Length: 384
Image 1 (cartoon, rainbow, N blue to C red):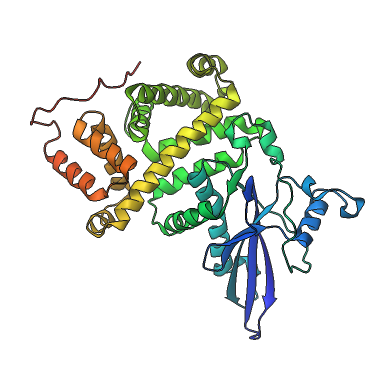
Image 2 (image 1 turned 45 degrees about the horizontal axis):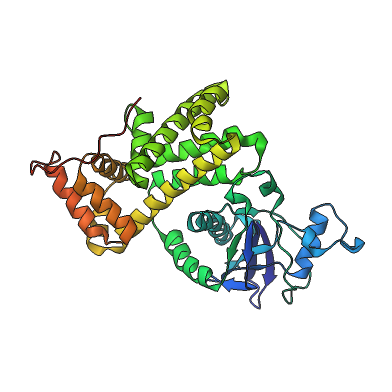
């Protein structure tokens, strides 16, 4: 992040502009206001010239503007803070502004299913008067080593930006339990390493740890994590079985990696590469896809809970540990009961209100084995 103090008329206060550069995001329109003195826009000409210098190039040698291929978007927020003898970046207001900016690429990934990174650079100051002509957009350098859809830029126009604005502020203001924050943190760190082949082990492990923070608990963690992910993401029985197989195999590979063995290539290839016809990088990107969808669905679930006054009042009184248990029990029962499975699917596919699902869950906790005699869904996922 970068911050620039500008003195206001009152000597006791300074205005601060905090910003960072977003990679892999292309705006169809020059700028977009997110509210609260927060916006995303293209780079100014003076900033673009400084990027040449930051990249080790001389701007006066006639290099085309589009050679800056990965730093075309700026996210910035303006704040006012009391003057202090402490460095500006240690003030509470600047820390909050930095936190706001850091949440933006995470929200963009959850919204777009595209990897977006925040690059921290400190260009020198110059006149910032107007936005120059749009540069030709090229994929960022890190994306050139990817072989999946994440190599393509995330393109946003007015329609997408308006929808994202609502999602972003819901996401930014959502009170997230500790286990969700840990899951988002691990997911974000892994995504920040996308395209860095030397860090593929770390990226792989962090995605699995994100899922584990989100859905893992109890014994037989590989089976529980795989079955809950399959229940959360839904789909046809074949889709859920594929999800189960992939996540369980990934967890086994993760166990070998964290114990100093590195990714077990043979087992990984036997479980995943042979089944899906993919290489190592594609498998890690597929793990990103499973992790991203799981985090987004839990965030959507908690967001719906907080928007319903009746359910929110009950949820607020539950400790973080019990909130996670509520979600994991919901997923466990959805594998055994059609009514829970159908209600969960309806919630995600039809944007149904959370209250019927919450009420059904409370009722089932009193009679979990369904004495009404309804048929169970398809056979439970295999544990082999």
